[in-house]
Image 1 (spheres, rainbow, N blue to C red):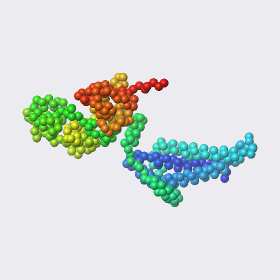
Image 2: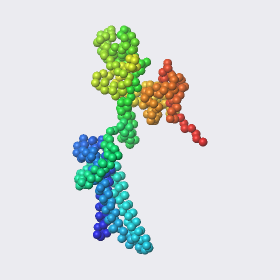
Image 3: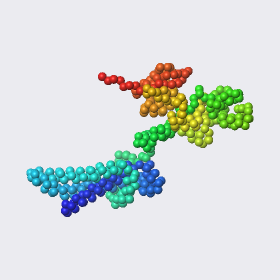
Image 4: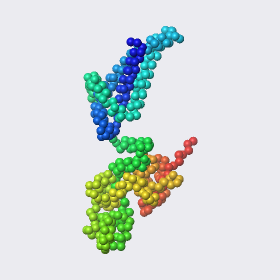
Length: 432
């Protein structure tokens, strides 16, 4: 063949190898979630791509057969076509005994450069930009190529399967998605500007409902406002102004018999059905839940029972607090759920330090301070719990803890309960 014919054949081989490299990366990198979205949008080719990923052995075998065959043929054609011309060009200024070897080396490097650049590097970089779109576009020709290579692919795959079985290697594809992977994708979306910062926090908080207990979001026992069975009308009127739902107790808070919704009381007041009394007409059955429930489990119970209020008890049947659907929603919204500055659990000061309420969940503390974790988090739920765990005693004012360059100092204590912490990043120590 002439030089032109050889060069044209070499170009065709490079393009064929580039096509196989492009499809190999596209099919391997195509994400199942995006393919499902394309399929739901009506693109049937996405279903074929997903099916090919489930049975990827035939595709990779055919791809490797094609790439290796093309590479070998490209070396033969390139060396035979280019070597004589390189020898003729080099002989114009060098005609020594190494001329033939130099011509071979130059032709080899030229063909290798062409295959690396146009058949490997560039196609793979293109495929990484939009693997799902490219995989959907090329599913028809690659399916035909796989059918052509089917006999040889079967032989190669059979040998590979035998070797995998000998070494007990499980080749089942794992498609499960973890929270860390979702969180990383959400963070990447926020950094790229696709998601706003508050949207990123909302999404992460929703997934954390599965791990956070009701104790991290409830109104604690000390702050619960409740009615007694013999509550006076004046006392009821006074308390109604501050809350919407009240537990009703027989004497003490640990003997809860139900709860009252202020809407029922207001209806009676509007209809001038005074005096306001606590009886079977106004007291509702209250859900009693253990403090070991997660927020996600409680949300399911609220959905099933149509209730939005529950009393939380511990293993000794003592009331730990109360929780409402609004408390769960505030957990999802984080600081965006607090419209008043004084209601916020975390307030940043002008000097860059933070005032953190002792009841602030540790997840919010970590996010604010940029910490990946806190020591043995399974032992506590709040910032106050973290301090007690680290200090190994009942904290008092000015007690402090340092962890990963952050100083936590007790600012205020109310009857053994930590009200507020002062938290700040420590300046790095000077090194000699």
